[in-house]
Length: 253
Ligand SMILES: NC(=O)c1ccc[n+]([C@@H]2O[C@H](COP(=O)([O-])OP(=O)(O)OC[C@H]3O[C@@H](n4cnc5c(N)ncnc54)[C@H](O)[C@@H]3O)[C@@H](O)[C@H]2O)c1
Image (cartoon, rainbow, N blue to C red; front, side, top):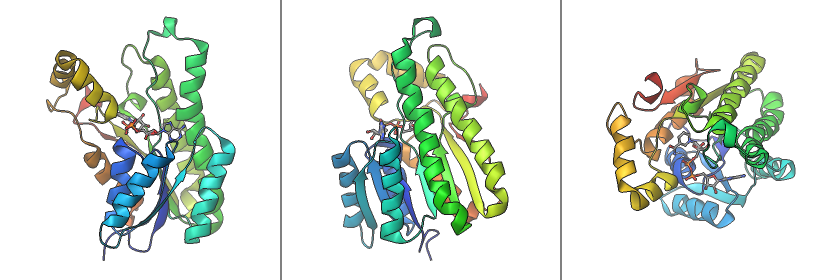
């Protein structure tokens, strides 16, 4: 039997990149998945991919994680459709524009924090409102290697992802005796849309950054999805409150 057979849950930011890979992988392991993204068409495309694979169960919904009503509606839709919420991969996030801290505008600070930190908080709160009475569940946040270390030129993104670490650890402790586990996956530099754009427009920079990776290559969304699947499943039953780096050694430098 697949690890996620009979499990029901959701993935945010699943219209592309890591979220899409995770939704597809969870479904391939037997889970029924609510696929959500602020881009509703992209979410539906991922759900259609899952359904087109033999036996895949998925439906989609446009969700803006920075909007409280939208997040509440997402979790309510999952419960209405599936009757429960066994797992949630809170993955949606943005990099934003990168500057030295001294050059960030307040508007850009607010935009990045509203999605990456407040959005993750809104999702976790709505999910826990279902999981606590249910007395079971696994929440996995997509944090970042930037939750573990600092690097010049993305202070606000780094702060938002350090904030996700705080939410993860506290929610794990608060719910450890209620059958609920909360962890984060911390990707390194992963080959998704933004990086593919750099490869097209600035191949020299693309190669230079790659050579800084300890394993001399970028990560793939599918490699993060394997970690998410493990954290969502019972195979990781002793893991809670952890920031799991999946980064080819990037965060140890
Ligand atoms: N790619 C990397 O190198 C990397 C490294 C570390 C962490 N991450 C994190 O991984 C997550 C996914 O990033 P990705 O690289 O797959 O990027 P991506 O841009 O391919 O995917 C992000 C998805 O989130 C959606 N989204 C954006 N704002 C949203 C909102 N307000 N509500 C709902 N959906 C929204 C986008 O439409 C998009 O489909 C992010 O949290 C990012 O910070 C990525």
